[in-house]
Image (cartoon, rainbow, N blue to C red; front, side):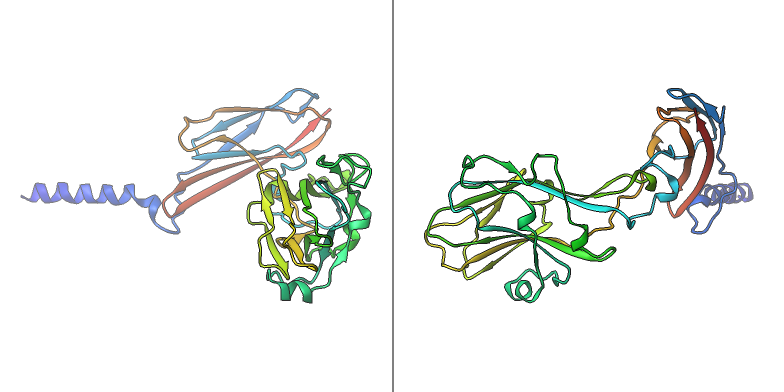
Length: 312
């Protein structure tokens, strides 16, 4: 009997020890990770070679290139960029001077006619190109001289503060006019000296994803519709004179940037990774980072190994 009790005690102790990683705050000092760089000096087009030991659950790699620096992994705001915008429009009838591009720095974010009317809006329309009377109706035209031309709207925003972009359709004539807006793109462009990837502030894929809200004046009928590629506003003979149709973006930030991202070189289901190589195609000095983590229930331990790599 005593022998059975003793064996039961041993089993319980072993079980508790096996659960040690699940105890909140446990450091579990047997978890380690080591990484070694074969050579810190390499040539353009060659690969930096790393030797890894132990078996973390997840290993990620930051190359140190623009957009992939460990120090910028949590950065979402950066001042000093230029806010650029472009889009395309088409119209099915004339007169075509019924669409405006608007921007506001004090819209409340409440999508109703009262709050739209109470906000201050600046018209950007005259800075863009739209189909004119000589244009072929039903064809998309770029907002600049070419499709790749952007308008700089930085001066219409305040760094670090939200703003709202809107398309406003005014009903002016008893004619069925259909406006379509496509290839919307707004980007935060930084000088190369900033060492940061340019950031997308908003694009056409967000038109129908809940990132815009419709507000109408003097007409209860829904006029805006979206597809996966463009926004459309349709008016008709029954629309009241003086009706307005607004399509307003979510709050945007002129200083927004995406956090720098790593690549995953090992996940929890894979066998131990002993070697890793990464090719550099541009000369420079890079701070590469390997991040390894052990992840258990209520327990995580992370190691960060940094290496200076000189590419010539």
